[in-house]
Image (cartoon, rainbow, N blue to C red; front, side, top):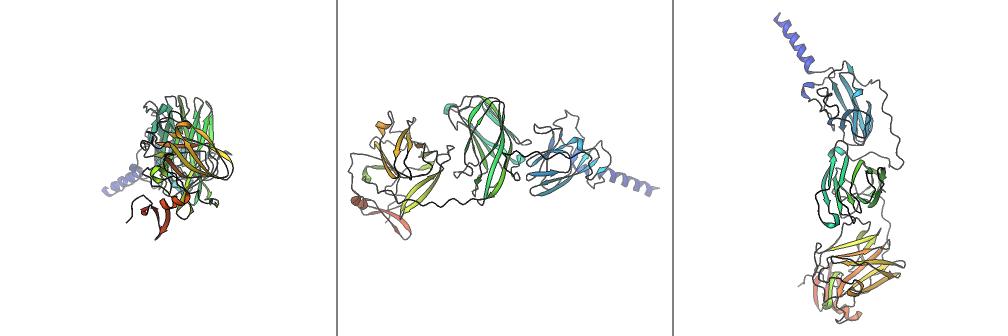
Length: 495
């Protein structure tokens, strides 16, 4: 009798611990109720599976019913039960779970993810014979590129925000991110008068390959018409995606799809949304997708021009920013101002470098970490050499706490621009220049020999300048010889 009782207890214990599926449900917590106001508490569990993350029970804006929100490692193409799919996330409709145990298979870009869902009030086991009609595949948006979504909302987060109306930092505006729905909510409290005054950075886990092209897609919605949102695919100095400016109409949803852009190695996996020229508004950014759309496109072969004429100003009368002919003590960086302009240093002749710019609209040089480069009252002229293939013009202004952009005509070939700063930029503070800015640029151009100088100094001809600033390669190293003294490329005297 004792033996029979023991067998009965063992059988009862087994039935309590293990379902017909073989899952030990006592090892799993009930899924939290975020939609039913307590009606779904202690009702549903989900077993573990590789790559599966169970969030909670909810009803996000993109969904058609209450459900269990789960995410997998990559974009979902199919689900075996009734669901709403959004990128790498799926909302499994609670109505799909009638049996006590239901088998679920999600197909995503990296394979299949199979697991079981337990429903406390259900009976029997459903191994895939769900009688509900499967959720129809959504009609593709013709503006959205095809391909699996590499963006996983559950692994993303807002990592930085910056709000500076009229460049004065404020803390009233905010940005939040919902990892369950993949939605960024931006609450702008202030009037923004210029581009890049507000910035939201979203960290993600997609690594761009240099051998691939990518697009980014998302939906924008604002309760008030605003303009000047610039999307940057990456926050590195190298731009993965062409920056694109987006204008929003009040209370309309904009389905946005970027142009393809090539990937770069070592990117920092941050999408940047820059806001400017915007009134106070509430903006949502949702349905974010990052997709691979083909192999990288090799850049066209560029035939560079001959080098610019050698500078003709005595080194003693020059304050140099960028030139092989003169030593500079100023650090220079290309400002991250949302421009489409790309910079590449090229060699035009032996030992002669220049900066090649493509896909240009405007350009900013940040000098000395955006601090004054010194008192330039003794150097009231600025020289630069600009090369263009066709006649046109270019806008330019120093930044000294103000700006006063002026257009300069360009003829085909190298143009030597010698600018009287006091005349062209009335009110300029020559003791506080910390940036240089070019605008309305030709699509491609070259810039070289940018320096300030004193026009009252000794101007020398080309023969003499070779004596003062000769350049040559020795042992594979570029050296500059001035008055018989050798300097390396950093300006350090060589023995």
